[in-house]
Image (cartoon, rainbow, N blue to C red; front, side, top):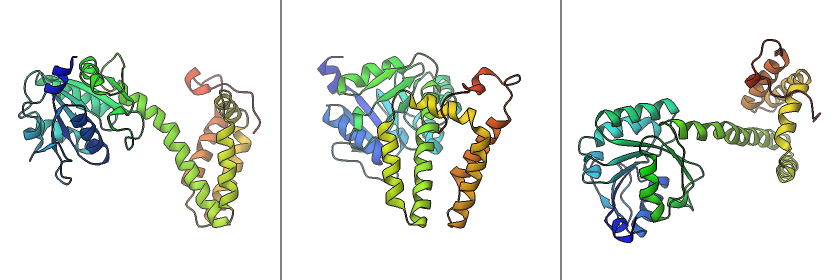
Length: 279
């Protein structure tokens, strides 16, 4: 895509909050014509403010829906009223694979290509350069449109929902790890040793390497029974400290399931690899 095409690119951004606003500003800086809509947030400088999803989408080559997963379907239905033929609708919200597939079906029924886009890092500070993973019928077109403007886009061959699936699989680990850290530090604060635990966690994260994942999985399987008892004790302690043990009890329940697992009946995907670490 040459510079003339980039300058003529007409993009609508629906949702001008932290993520959408940053992306819209970068699109303007890259030379695109940007129209925006957000019922609560005014358009940033250089973005034409509009009064509805349909008004923003009118005449656009690309629509970026960056509002929220709960609003994604309504935004699409509203925007399609004036989305021109040949336009590409891209949903950047963190929605389930099922919702993304549904969005693709709605768009497809009206002859509009759809792209399921997952933002694979936090947007503040990165804006349009936030790593993106995209799937769906319009994935290739999405990459062709935005890469010349500086976007980091990886195309995942497959239907809408596949990019969302990959992101959410990562989220199970990353957000789960973050939640565990929040709960542990809250308990340590209540116990008067937050600084000690913060330093301990930081040291563990710093020492992590390619073998850490195997150690965590193998140790959980091998020592599931003992660790179930340990996490029950941890949950009891948090309760005594007046800290709700949400992650602790979830860990206890998962370990209890592992302890009850039978190699003769479990599938390979649920088995993991027993043996290994003792921590």
